Length: 410
Image 1 (tube, rainbow, N blue to C red):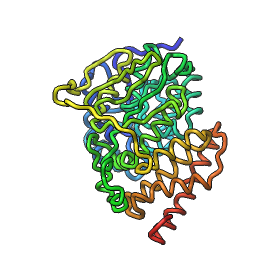
Image 2: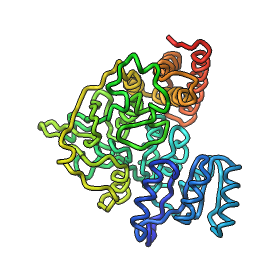
Image 3: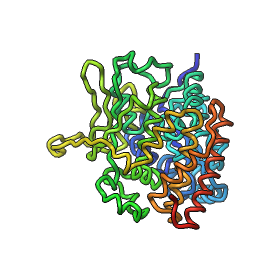
Image 4: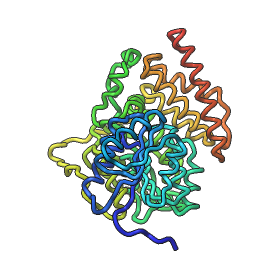
């Protein structure tokens, strides 16, 4: 039997400088007797990671770029800090599997988070999953790794965390679950804010700027996820993620537009009951819930004041306004490497939009063309998933170049 170390729980934060990473460190700072930071990782943000290292004194810090890592190491040494600085994907995997780490916040955005998240699963850690792409790309591989290595998997996305809280007590994403119907569940109601363009005239969407797309009305997020929210691809990816977390199919998940972002998601039961998890839109709530589960602890989030909220609205999503949502349902139903192809094409299209190479309305077109021309494999090995990802990126890039050259994609 493994010996559980005493003292504060060691935590590795993958993606420490992003919004989820910052919120995680805020929660940790409120409970120094309970948690300690073992490792922090970032892409290229040397300045922010340096300040985080000064505040939390981790044993390790990892940056994607070797030059940036050397800069950070020099600054830490000059400040008298002994944090060891590493670089590259192999180092991300290493800090995710450290013996002294018991919880891993998986908050690296996009496909880059797949390998370190898998490393945490193989090492039997409690994975706090904020990186939805790991499940979207390789759901079966990750879930098998979690179950075969006695790891724990707790969802951090506010919607999936809400579903988890609304399911029957004792439900575990890490165990082979019964189908939801056997638990009396009729349907999952996955809420979405609708993003910044929910009511915009559709004719104006073509001229939307990256700055407008990144101005989410309720949440403070990074650029990529903000654009995904604006196209509702983020919600489509969450549908696929929910299928793996809760052993269900896309047709059992109904997306519900809820502009206030107060009801984070609901579970509808066959006796007519609908259980909902509510709260202010602050990611520290699901982070604290997953870190302390099955207990509860202070997150720093103010209690919900229903009198101030006063009104809650719900709408059906407009699939013509948000074609990315329908594309995600299609990929989820196809299975295999379909979701990996969808995700890869979306990452290329979103970055191209942020770089102002294509229009906002070109994003779903590029994804659709890539999906149509790709061959879906079974996706049961990591090699197959990564090959599908690489091929889809190459194909989507070609469509971006074609779009940029012609100024149009029809």
